[in-house]
Every structure is written in C-alpha cells, then in structure tokens.
Length: 374
Image 1 (cartoon, rainbow, N blue to C red):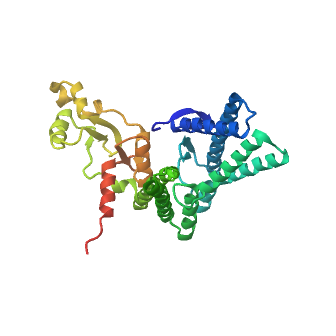
Image 2: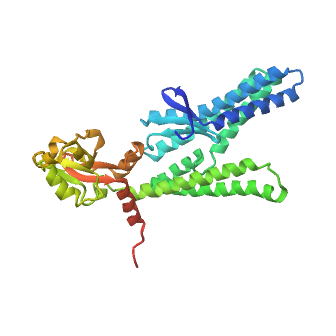
Image 3: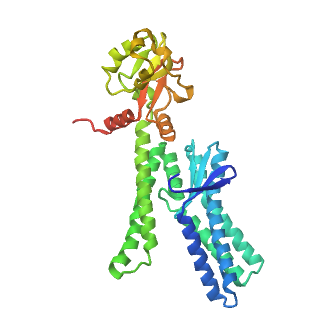
C-alpha cells in the first residue's frame, strides 16, 4: 500500500500504519506527559513520560477498535476485509465490496461510532465506580473524551466519514439507488470540507493565527475524498447494467490455431500494427491460448510455413478470463486489483468473444457521458 508499513495481522486482517501515525504518537506522548507533569508536580519526569506513552497507545488502540467495529460487522455480512490502515486523520477498513442492502450498509457504517461510544461509556463508568484520582483519573478522562470526540467527528453526515456512509445508506433506502446515496453524501461532505477550510483560513489570513490549522487540513481531506467518492459513484452508475461483452474491442486480435506462422505473419501482423499479442482459438472458436509477435523469433523463418500457431502458442489460465455475461463493473475492479490492461472475454461454453481493454472501457464511459445532440 502507498507509503504504509505492514505491522502484522489483527484477527486475520492485514494491518498497516502510515508513517504519519508515528509522528502522532510521539506528539501525543510528549503533549500528555508535559500536561501531567504540570498538573501533578509530584510526578517524576520519567513516570510522566511513561504515562504519556500509555495514554498515546490507548488512543491508538481506540482508533483500532473503531475500525474493528466496521470490520467485524462486514465480516458477518460475508464481506472480506482486505486491510485496516491507520493514517493521520484516523483509520480506514478496506472492504472487498459494498454491502448488498442499505440496511447492511447502515450497520457497517454505524458500527465504528458505536464502538467508540461504548468505549467512552465503559471508561467513564470505570472512572466513576473506582473513584479514580490523580494521574489515573486524568488519563481516563482523556480517553473517554477522545472516544466521544472520535464518535461524534465520524458521525458528521458527509463522505468519507462514517456519518456520510450512514447518510448514503438512508438515501439509498429512500431512492432505491446506492449511487444517488453516494452522490448526495459526497456533496454534503464537500460542504463540510469547505466550512472546515474556511474556519481554518480566516484566522490565518486576518490574525496570523494557526489555532485552526487542523480544521484546514481536515477540510482538504474531506474535499478530496468526497470528490473522489462522487466521481467513482458516477462511474459505477454508468457501468450498471453493462456486461463484459459490451466493452469487447471490435476486431479483437484473434487467430486460428491452424494458421501457419507464415500466414500469421503475412495476414495478421502486417495488417495489425498495433497488436503485439493475439488470442488463439480452435476450430470451434474456443479460446486455447495466446501468441505474441516476439514468439516468432524462437522459430527460424525457414520453418514458418511448416509450423502452425498451436505448436508455438502459450496456454491461458482460466483464471485470466472473464465470462461475457459478467457485470462490467466487476471486470473493471478485477483489472484494477490485478493491475491488468486487458482480459479475454469468453462465453459459458468457452467460445471466445474478444478482448476487453481498460482503454475501451474508458472510451465507452466517455461516449455515455457525452450529451445527446439537440
């Protein structure tokens, strides 16, 4: 993952930390240790530092618990959690796919804030029932407050925050369209983003104060991610109802296994300058392999007329093909996940339809975005 460090697994879920989190831990440790030293002068510097580190790690654990809340609910719905990543603005549980119903999406979204609120309640009860005092009471108060703040901040009704996902689920329920929910929640997220940016910029511009600089950073974070979510939702909506066959390239590079290399070179390569790799079919039109232009170099030109493509071609694994009826959105996600530029498309009986290129999908989307002439 970009710039992140894998630190292990949590309940079987890959766990990553962005380097910025180490800076956060250091700052929190220093800040709270200094605060405890001032509030409780009897503490030695070393003990205050240890208590500050414990506080920072507890805050770290609170964010992890928040993300695990999302993850466990998703897993109960049969959704694989690809990773949990902590970064400077919090955490992110990366899910394999979206929930299938708005109700399920709602519970995945609200699970994190609920965990934070429960932790706030538990910590508060511990502090009250144990009559904690001194540094321990101060630490418990900080942890309770932070978990409350974590829940309330994430409940802001705009993407990419949990509140935005809750709003998305509600709009999805009302309209029956998940993409309308994403679009609406993204716009709300952008509004909150601009409010945060404004509240951070005004004190800086008029008074030279950096007091609200965090608002500025959060605002840019909301604007960027809300915009990306809206754009992705528009793409998803455009792809809805389309299948892999709809994006197959016209005149795909397909050759028969019975062609000689000489015929292949003369008839296909010379007339298909842009293709360096061709799909190979048998007499029934079924996909049996692939041949690249560079493969011809392994055979002397004197043998091209007597050598058929099937003697040189390379087999294609079934896992690297997609069915013609497969939703195009799933195919695009597969291309992204496996970092591929193209995939062969076959029918249920193995007959080759053609090749699906990422560039063709982009062109298809552009053609659908273009307004109809008046």
